Amino acid sequence: MVAQITKLDISWEPLPDNFQLEDEPVENTSQPILAGALRESLEIAGFIQPQMLIASNFAVCATVNGQFIAKAPDWVYVPCVKEIVGDRKSYTPNLEGDIPAVVMEFLSDTEGGEYSFKRTYPPGKWFFYEQILQVPIYVIFDPTGGLLEFYHLENGRYELKQPDENGHHWIAAMGLFLGTWHGTKEGRTGYWLRWWDESGNLLLWAVEQIEQERQRAEQERQQKERLMAYLQSQGIDPKDLPGNL
Image (cartoon, rainbow, N blue to C red):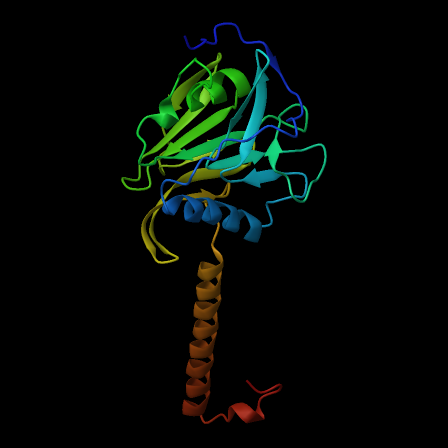
């Protein structure tokens, strides 16, 4: 008979050296790309600080009733860790730093896992994030259809929140909005999760910044050409002007 978790005796202990983390394969090739894109724009914007932990498919651990539990969210954000470790293999909240402020799951080919409130050991993801870790924000995203479900922990339960008039959700712990965007990156055309700052400006990816700079340079070149043509039409040689053009 499978033991059901009724009473939650939660502790935060170091992962034993001989403990084998579950190997959770990535069931959708889009998942690493989606997670990487989320991190990329944060890094370019200068958001990421050394004390933060931002990871994907990474084990977050707890001990419940004497049994170790590890789940690997598709994306996780921890505001502050106690020690900066270069090659961190897992993370135990409270022991090593803050409770994750945000966890995300991208819907995979295995239906229902992201919504599992299974109380038997090992517990489901929803139960683990809500009842054990008590993560304030839980995001479930369907990359195929673009549906973004944004849950906020209220009175110990996740409540589904509606987006604002722009279709975005405010994450106070990050000072950023989260929303969906449709387009192409890395050869993938479809729905993506994107960040917007408090003023509503989209945090750009590297390729978008490069294109933005190219367009700016092209506009400046065209403006210079128009100015030179105007001066010449007025009988003025641009070479005769101070500093030239």
